[in-house]
Structure formats: structure tokens, C-alpha cells
Length: 152
Image (cartoon, rainbow, N blue to C red; front, top):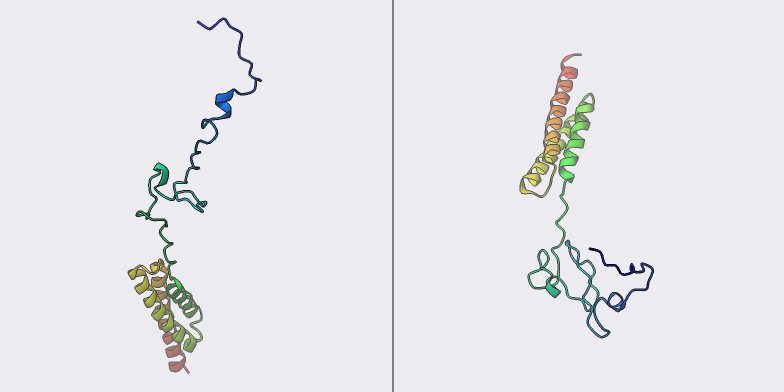
């Protein structure tokens, strides 16, 4: 059964319990929560990972500090092999240029595939495409040279 007293005034000022949620003056106030992905910039005086009952963050083995960023992949050789391979295959009519650029494409593509195999690069497919296009450019350039030399 509901009480028969008058309803509480919703516009009344808050009582003493609501104005001091952490107790009387002089009691310590807990620190703000730390985000799951790390503390970011920790203010002076606040504990780092593992302080005040928070679990330690990733890589925090009893000390401040978060793991550094991983190195960026070095995809330059595979990309250069692909670009040179495409150029070699497109300009096969200029057979001396196509042969030189095609050989460079095969070399750069092979270096790029080696880096991808070691985990230093992430573009193994581009490097392979550079090897294929470079080889096709060399074959087309040699074919054009043979056609120009044999047919007067």
C-alpha cells in the first residue's frame, strides 16, 4: 500500500547526502577511471596501470609504460616492382627501354617478395605482380627487337 503522506517535492534542493557523495570534507576522493586502452597522459600524482585496484595494462610489468608502436611495413620495393613492370609491359614498342625496365621490375619484385616473406612488408601480391609484368615486358621487348631485326 502506498503511504498516505504528502508527495515529496521534486523541486526541493538536495539533502546533505546528495551534496557530499564522498563523505565529509577532508576525505580522499578516488581518481578518475582509466580507459581500457591505456591511461593516456597520466596527471601528476595519480597512479599508473595497476594502481588503485585497476588491472595493469598491456605490457605493464610492474612499471609505467606501454608497448611502442610496431614498425610500418616497408612496401616500397614491391610497389616499385609493380610500377616498373606495368611500364615495361605497356611501352614494349620501345624495346630497349622495355627490357631494362622489365629487368629492374623483376629485381625489385623479387626483393619485395623476400621482404614480405620475412614479414617486413605486407604487399607480397604486388611484388609478385611486378615480377610477372616485368617478365612479360622483357619477353615483349625481346619479341619486338627480334621482329625489327629479322624483318627489314
